[in-house]
Amino acid sequence: MTILVTGGRGHVARAVVQQLLDVGEKVRLASRNPTAVTAPDSVEVVGADLTRADSLIPALAGVSKVFLYADPAGIDNFVEAAQKADVEHVVLLSASPVTGANPGANPLAVMHKAAEQALLDSELSWTFLRPATFATNTLQWAYSIRTEGVVRAAYPEAYNDAIHEADIAAVAVRALTEDGHVGRAYLMTGPESVTQRQQVEAISAAIGRPVEFVELTPAEYRETLARWGGGLVDQLIRYLAENDGVPMPVINTVELVTGRPARTFDEWARDHADDFR
Ligand SMILES: NC(=O)c1ccc[n+]([C@@H]2O[C@H](COP(=O)([O-])OP(=O)(O)OC[C@H]3O[C@@H](n4cnc5c(N)ncnc54)[C@H](OP(=O)(O)O)[C@@H]3O)[C@@H](O)[C@H]2O)c1
Image (cartoon, rainbow, N blue to C red):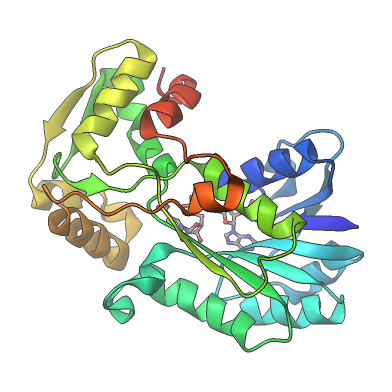
């Protein structure tokens, strides 16, 4: 049976596809922009947009399980189409803030909670993945590192619990291919709490070139992120301020589920060194 992976151009989706192929599964990859997707020859690539119900019916034909990017705007379409297609199991890429103290104040938590709730209200069997901060977020520094050897940001000593996309994918693949994950919600982090400055140092070591952290004030940093739109920028600045000099707890879900310790940020930086060169 075929496993459908949505969010085809996303980092996590691409890692899920590769790891499913590694264990011999048949994979269909869906993207809103299928011509922009690069995938191994054995992968069937289809166009699908969760907000367009008509695109989901062919994408789900003959599919037994789905790796799903959370999109509250399209989740009802997805639930309806997946139930009609007799999909057996859905692994949802949610996010750790849904378990935070005040999820209603965090736009990311609100969005992911809505997607989780739609699956809870459905007849579909589900597993929720609730990863912490993606290590791939640091790719936003790639251009200035490549062109100037600098990172300009606020709160260099702010900690995060960065997780490698390959570890999120490894848990997803277990939930898609093994028994025992139905109705489970996996909060997961990287193996260590790292500051933004330590992340810049790790990238510098991985590419073998100095990278300077140029500290901005929160107001200056906010201006550089204006294109993101207010809610997400407020959330990011609040997150950095709250974790400034405050190490975060980490949990070993990745190791418990996969039997392999989560990858460190140093390892992520080595895996992505070419993105910063
Ligand atoms: N960044 C973090 O720290 C973090 C932490 C926890 C959870 N998350 C969650 O993880 C997900 C990916 O985050 P990311 O920032 O790393 O993004 P990303 O890797 O750039 O991937 C985003 C993907 O979502 C897919 N997508 C969006 N709208 C869609 C729609 N209407 N129909 C079908 N697919 C759609 C897109 O796939 P196509 O364009 O190829 O269709 C896109 O490739 C998001 O839900 C995010 O909230 C992120």
